[in-house]
Image (tube, rainbow, N blue to C red; front, side, top):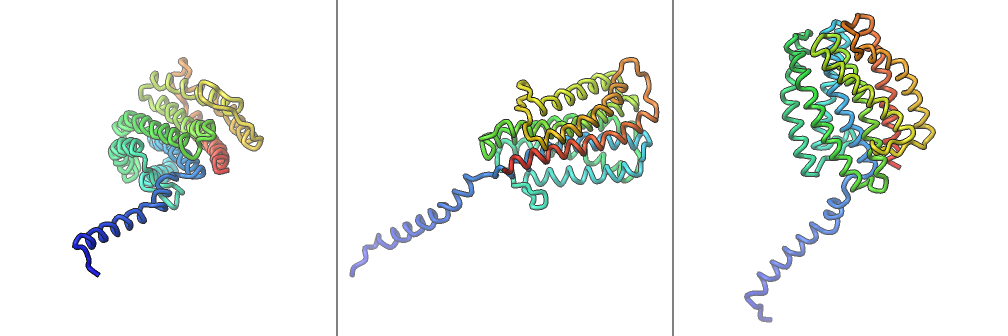
Amino acid sequence: MLVNKFMVPCRVAGLILAVSVLIMSPTRLAVASEGPTSSEYGVVLNLSGKQRMLTQKMSKEILLIALAEESTANLANLKSTSDLFDKTLKGLRDGSVELGLPPTTNSGILRQLDKIDAIWADFYPVVKTILESGSVSSEQIAAVAKNNLPLLKQMNKAVGLYEKDAEKGGLKSAPGLAATINLSGKQRMLTQKMSKEFLLVAYGHDAEENKLSLLETYTLFERTLKGLFDGDETLGLPGTKQQEIRDQLEVVNGLWAKFKPIVEYGADYKTTSIPKDKISLLASGNLPLLKEMNKAVGMYEKEAAK
């Protein structure tokens, strides 16, 4: 049999094409099109939202150290909080089996994570210096007061992008749930933000400005808590029907009733200084509120996995 001189190259080319198609289809294409599952979206929204809280928790812990409120314990807390923020930030980008995070592939979200990385690269060294020295200077307080909000703001933008991605992907059938996980997660951050603002007032750093911020923060916390119960169209909250989650929100509401008078005192225009006992009350009261709010977020995350 005579072999046309063009047949061998054509057969080789055809084989290469067939192998290429085999490599790309159907398995590889299927994996690319699947994206995160509903369960994974729940974890991503939970932990990216938790990052917002950690920016404020670190700042709060630095202020408690500066105000000599259980400094040894708060130095240990600061190390744990900053380590977790750093680990989660890397996990959001590259994925983390330990944290249950899939890697981020959305190019817009990756660019947003780049912005967060840049701010964190300036913020983290200040934290490390405080941990090494065991003390906080007024210059470090000023640096933390200046940079924690840009870190929070950019992290919040990332959460919004994840929420939109979730609504288009695994949670597209329940967009209200994505918003609920986002805003219930944001409540955790608000517990720490209002604590930080109260402590900035106590420290005497931009007291009047921080009083106003404190008022706005606790007002938003209270409104969102009501919206989680019964819905809030403006906030995009459909309300919570599951009795188990409503029961948990009642636990949060009970703690809030005790905590609110403390932050109200700090935000009051008549308050000229904050005594040590008020600082101690805030220091002991904010973590139970955070813990119980975190339980509620976990329940919403489980709903996403169903």
